[in-house]
Amino acid sequence: MAQKDSNWERELLTNLATDYMRDQRRQRRWKIAYRLLILVFILISLFTFSPRRSMDDALRSKPHTALIDIEGPIFSKSPANADDIAASLKEAYKDKGTTGILLRINSPGGSPVQANFIYNELRRQKKAHPSIPIYAVCTDMCASAAYYIAAGSDKIFADPSSLVGSIGVIYNGFGFVDTLHKLGIERRMLTAGVNKGFLDPFSPMDDQQKMKLLSMLDSVHQEFINKVKAGRGKRLHDNPDLFSGLFWTGQQAKSMGLVDDLMSPGQVARDIIGAEKTIDYTSGGSFFEKMAKRFGAEVGVSLGTLLGLGSPLT
Image 1 (spheres, rainbow, N blue to C red):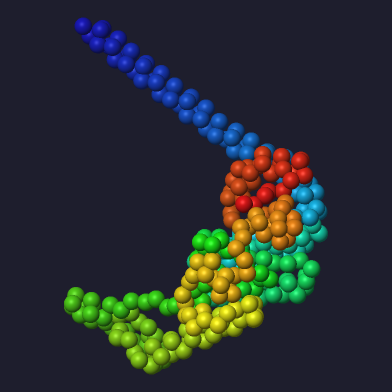
Image 2 (image 1 turned 90 degrees about the vertical axis):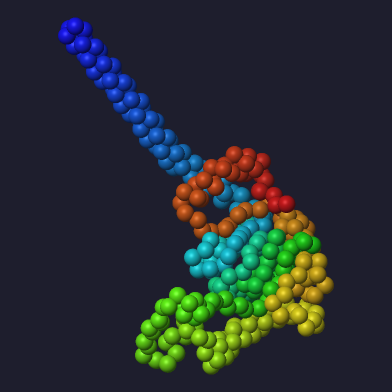
C-alpha cells in the first residue's frame, strides 16, 4: 500500500513538473514572439522612412494643397495648439509645390491666447507669402477661439449645417459658501494683499472683484472683435447679435458675412485652390501615434504616390 502511495505521489509530482515546464516554454515562446514583433516594427520603420521620405519629397515638389487640421479644444497642451500649428504652417510654406493652405477646423474653441498666437502667425505668413492663399473650412463646429483663428485666413468656408460664431468670452465658476455653513465648516483664509483671494469659491462674491473680472472679460472680448473685424473687413454685415456670443448655422453665417461660401474641404482644394492633391502637414502627436497613423495609411499613400496622386479630400 505504501508503495502505491509513493508511486502516486511521484506521478503527481512528475505531472506537475511537466505542466510547469510546458507553461514556461509557452510563456518563453510568447516573449520571443513579442520581442520579434517589436523588432519587425522597428525595422519596418527604419526601412520605410527613407523611401517614404523620398516619395513625399517627390509629391511635395508638385502642386498640391497643404492641409492642416485644427481639431478639438484649443489650449497650449492640447493637440490643437499655437506651437504645433505654427510648425505646420512653416513646413507647408517651405515646400515649393504648396499652391494653397487649407485649415480644416472642427473645434468648440478654447484659449484666446492660443487663438491670438495662431491668428497673428497666419497674418505674418500671409504677408511673407502673398501668392499662397490660406483658406479656413469649418466642418462640424467653428466656434469661439476656433472662429478667432479662421478670421485670420483669406476666406472662410463652411457646410450649411456647420455651427459657426460664438464671438464672446466666458468665465465659469462656482460658489460653495452656503454648503460650508450647512456642513458646519469654517473657512480660514489669510492673505497678504487685499485681492489675493480673488474669486475664492468658499467666500462670498465681492462686488468690486466681480466688476474687475467683467472688465477683463470685456477687454478680451473687444480684442476678439477687433481681430474679426480686421480679418473679415467689409464682408461683415450689420447685426446686433454678431458679437453677442451667439452661434449660427453655416447658411446663416454666410448671410451675416461670417462665412464666404458653402463648400467642403475637397471642393475648396479642387475648385478654389486648384490643387486636388493634398498633403497633410498637421503637426503634433506622440511618436507611436504618428507611427500608427503612418502604417494605417501606408498602402493608400504609397499607391497614391506611385500613381501621382495625393490624398483627395471630401
